Length: 106
Image (cartoon, rainbow, N blue to C red):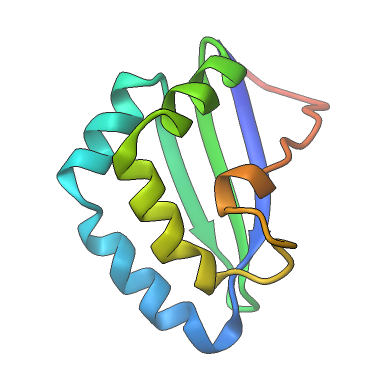
């Protein structure tokens, strides 16, 4: 199982709305994440807008490809893109760059 951690930055003026949107993630989006291998998926948001994402998956590339092929993900990414800084024209999923794991205590 691969552990994946990534960082994004939420616009400070949109943080409250970002939190609110994640209180009620669409059921079909939750289902798509599970079906494509996004296990133990967790988002953490710092007071300065730093978003830390963590997930576990057997195959990171396959998990990302699986979500790219889902229509619900297209809709979700289109709605979420406006919340982030520095996407450079990419959707949030494309902007995710996993951090290098340097230690893990099992």
